[in-house]
Image (cartoon, rainbow, N blue to C red; front, side):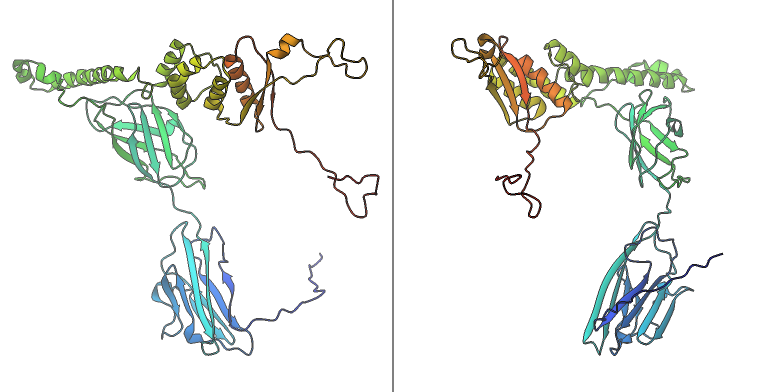
Length: 442
């Protein structure tokens, strides 16, 4: 067995500045994941022959006075736990603070130390922080029905991935349909759920999550795993009263002593309310600003949308409102620029004629300026698109499709030119470059 050893080859002394100094802090400044209940230790010292003013030392923990050197009992009661100590060995004062009540989970502790030396002639005022470990489990704070078949859950802290089977819904009123979750958004503080069918409007439900944890594996304990919410109720015009129960004859309602008829009519009333809501929404279908995505696809198809590349929902709304204007400007240079600006947001776009040197009979000399180029007719109607920035592959494909659609039919798109890499400049280096050989003036 070989015992490790340490040898100091050289020790460089550092002259200490006069005045009190803060050292040996535990937990250290900026430390994270500090275990709960860890005492706070620190030392204050001075360089000889300076003397520390013990009466001037004060320590704050999150704006609460934890140590006051001028008091009969320097360590304050909230920080005078079993491990708290005060030891003075000139010129060093060591203070250990043991909070009676541990700092909260994931809390940022701010420690401020004030001291002086030499009768108050030199002062110290230093602040540092550390972070307590996160041991608190997440909680289901609230649930909100954002739509007929969508539900949003709010947690007290980000959670890990949630399985669809981990969420259950229970109706607290009747008559009501049950809820089954079929989709879940990526987990975070807010989680959106998709339900298999609409919930009964206006009925209170309780949602429960099972086995959901945060990033550190802390599971949600009961009762923090449940939340109540009211199911989405579709809007209806003011003054409408379409109550099936009141439409029945009073004789039938009086005979319903068991309430079975009322419950059956309530089931029919829920279906009727959804049908009325769908009828009310018919006016939104032709409205580009409020139409659902499936209707926007049909509107664009009806307008003869010639663009096949993928579009977001917002882009579909914008295109449906601008497609007729794009048709009107088709075949013009401004129309090409406006279409490219609409889809790709490119403002620095230029359309230039094809610049190519061709062979001219009777003027070109064989072996000197003999360049094979396009015909005169092709060159007359050919053009290039010059863009001021580098494009991605998807942007290049979309730009090509847009320009080929918007250009005049008899013209030809030859190339799309983008800025190339900056030129490499071989600088002249003293001691390495040779005069007249690799010396380049630039």
